[in-house]
Length: 91
Image 1: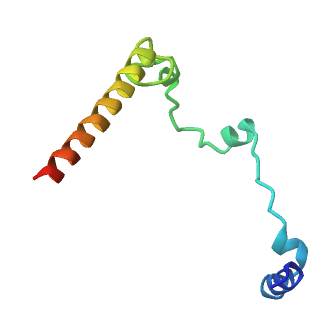
Image 2: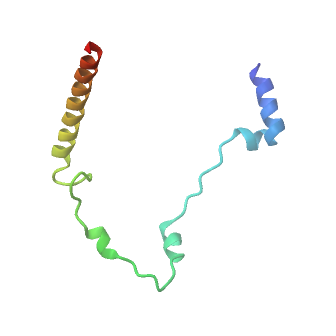
Image 3: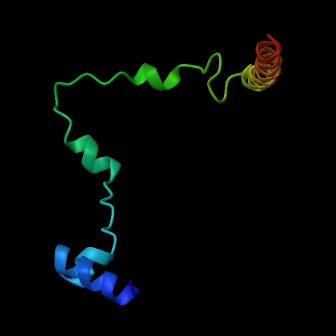
């Protein structure tokens, strides 16, 4: 089927060419507008922004060390699974 025929079918199903073949623009909001919609009595936890990252979160002091450990564990698991698969075939 030719592209022109495909486009005509799509246009027939969904309406005009502009609405069917063009992506709709994403709606962007300003932070000030979103904050204005928050009810006045709602408490805002400002201490949340002050929490320091821990563990496997990006920005943590241990992030790089833990990421390397995760990579090594993945490599070891793949090697173990390969050995396990070979032993099952031998049985």
